[in-house]
Image (cartoon, rainbow, N blue to C red; front, side):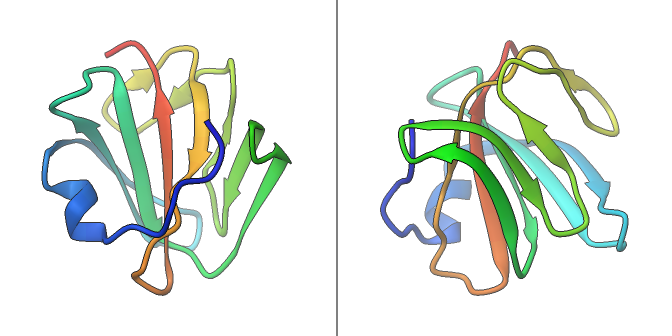
Length: 109
């Protein structure tokens, strides 16, 4: 999947439903939204001044928010209310909103 062009946070959330919410180890809110148009496509977002990415633009292996969570391709991601089995197609979604970070991924809904 790789990197997308810069997006507005409101545009991403326009056609999504909040499906999970939890806190990072620093107490920052993390929300998971499911895309209403593309079922099984999710956005994980929250405040983060930096992040780490393993892999490259076309093959992202893992993404790590400041304060968590650590999200890895072909792994299970555990939220507060639900789990997301076998995450695939991890991608960084660059936001115009400074200080926020967004990850797009696919998983069975």
